[in-house]
View 1 (spheres, rainbow, N blue to C red):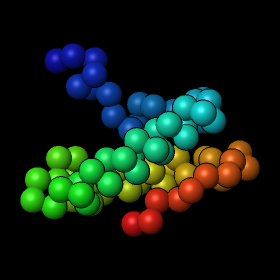
View 2: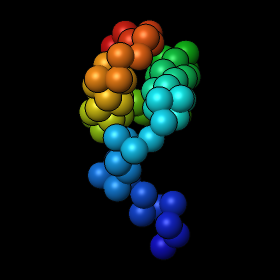
View 3: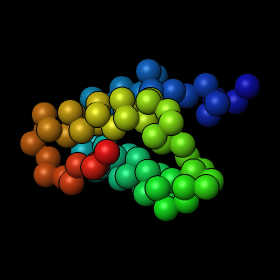
View 4: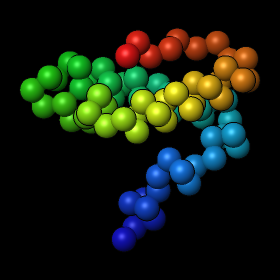
Length: 76
């Protein structure tokens, strides 16, 4: 099994990531959600079907809040 396949949310300590990195990850969740919502027949990322997406984005948003970062929240 590759290292990428073994990577999960629990192994990434978001507290050590840069603010810019967190913003990019949060934006990636938004883009995946937009892609799913724009393709209801296919839903390639299945963001709404998998609660881990929401949990992870909430953790990132919480960290960004703690850092006093101004960002646009995902409208779930």
